[in-house]
Image 1 (tube, rainbow, N blue to C red):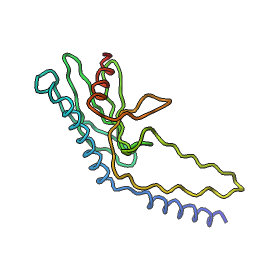
Image 2: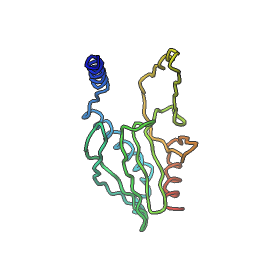
Image 3: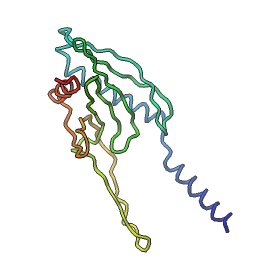
Image 4: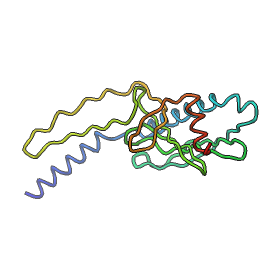
Length: 179
């Protein structure tokens, strides 16, 4: 009896594992491309200050570890304004509620940038509840995301997403530098 039950359990776990297997190289490459797009956006918004020598950018490497992707390396970015340094620090790509996150940090504060569906205005949480004697509600069908966008996430508990535009980036920089 136990042997049969355990065999069924093992078969079920193996099937789930095969269903949820991700293409590690593809996920990492997509994440690197999205980071590159984010950094290019930052450069574009700060271009006039960079050309005037008021802002300097320095790229570096960061080692990340994610449970399903293992260890891998991505680019990070340091923005220098006067004697201040702002670190654009990639957090990861396999996150709950976002396809990726980069923290903008300084000694004075942090602002979170998240890669979310283009039409998102905040995180969406779906809860399904049923009791032992009830049929579970049907699973909601989610369409694949057509377009991902970088947005600024406000602090919890009422998280909202702010469109990443030149003005919102400059406000984020002033916020992390306590400006």
